[in-house]
Length: 187
Image (tube, rainbow, N blue to C red; front, side, top):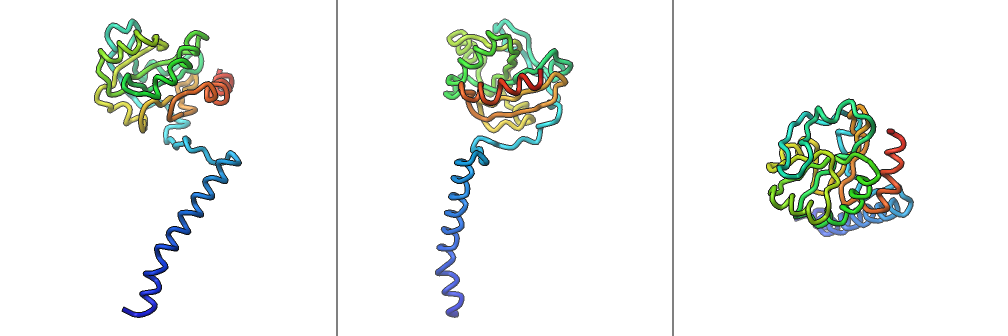
């Protein structure tokens, strides 16, 4: 092996580590200035109508099922929330969904890969913030929406166009800093 190849092989791990360190430093700087959002997972659906779907209702939940037809010609903006009873962050965000429900904001729910009995137990224990609620047991509709995991929430304007997506639990900060301004803008 030539000395040049040896030097190259010797310094390659150092170069990769330096590049990774520089990228990490750049990410930290972006977080400090607000230019980098670690939860900002891009969505190809922003600015588009919701994908076509029709899901069955969650029996005994007391609210109608949900389909893409229900997301067109709305009186105002709505939130579509993918959630599950087994999802710990869903418990964290649930008080904010209940608050929005009490304030009259329409929240539509899709129970993602959850057993109906478990979903119903969750809603009985924590309250039901959903005006419409459907089950997506196989998770196919979630794939069409580009869901990475639960909870995940989308804001649709009155025309049914997806304007915002958030991956993770809706905290009081997300509610005040992101959702409320979007609800006012798209009212």
